[in-house]
Image (cartoon, rainbow, N blue to C red; front, side, top):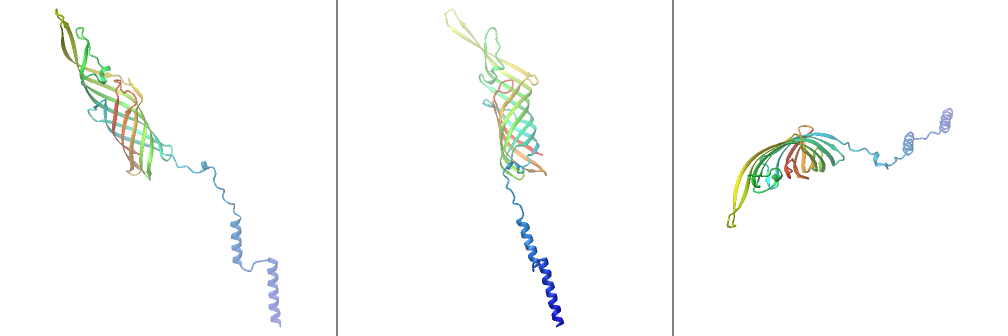
Length: 276
């Protein structure tokens, strides 16, 4: 009887303690319930409505140096030797696929021109009078050597950009500053003398002379502002660590007459650049 009373007393004490504390029977249930309440009390995330707050792609600035080989054509003639240009460029990214690329390049060209009558050099040379007779230039051979500084500003459009490779096209314009212009030429002039005899018959006497001229223009004598329109397409790929190598065929078309001789010169060639 005493044992039964002891068990009964312990049971009554446990029940009294449980009712005072109000604890659930399963401790695991407490943790589950608390976790569930914690999650339910979290504030929902507010969606971004102003997309200007989103992080933007970093716009990069890169430096390039390049070497170009080109041929030129004037009217129906082509340059006697290949022209060469070397320059430095800065490419500033404006968006993921558009960049602007200003630069500064020094170029040297040599042109040989031939004509059977008239032509682009008519304004440079005219046949002098000979014994009171006016002459006409019937043919000439001229050699023109030009050293110039070119300031291009091109916009580059990426067509297929992957990792560190890029297929692109570009267009823009160049200002040309002439450092040296040297002209040498041989001009053949024809003079015609007409005479009338006592019978009223007219006879003609022809005379041909050859004149060699040499002409130099002063430094910075001519600047062709936005004188050339530039068009190119190219491909860049990884080269020597973090650098990139660019191959870029190009053409340049005259927007206005170029050089002090007012020539319409067209260029075409290939440029190779290294981007650092």
